[in-house]
Image 1 (cartoon, rainbow, N blue to C red):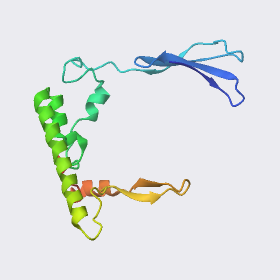
Image 2 (image 1 turned 180 degrees about the horizontal axis):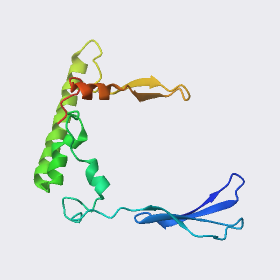
Image 3 (image 1 turned 120 degrees about the horizontal axis):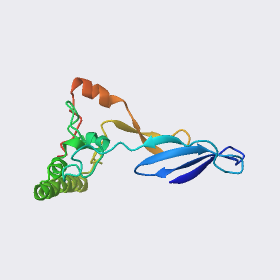
Image 4 (image 1 turned 90 degrees about the vertical axis):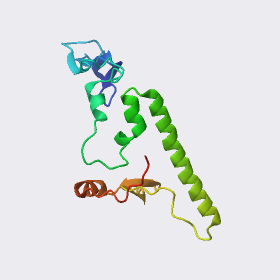
Length: 169
């Protein structure tokens, strides 16, 4: 990775260099772009945890491994609870593939039932999926429709009330 930081008029001020998976450093430069002074380490990769080369850790960093850690009280729709993912992380590949197929079939069956109900109903049905934690709103700048966080997730988590969550697994 290499780059140059310039001021608004385009005069070079600093070099940035390094390697995406090990470190990034900066070094001041003169107005002609020649390096001056010492370089400064901006970031160094944290070494992988011991044993990360094992199949169950996929050479992930500690941060990456911890992203998928289960914590108490999460919503039943949290992707960390996907049974196929858990099986894969445990190295049970065949079971993980079967579980993934089961989840996908469950989703297809739900859509198929909804489409049949939609076709036979004289009234429009509710959407197949309704977000629990977001609502559709018009962006005041662009005029585009987008989903906006409602803030209700943390309320539901504090009450442990997941009644709005669909059974997706």
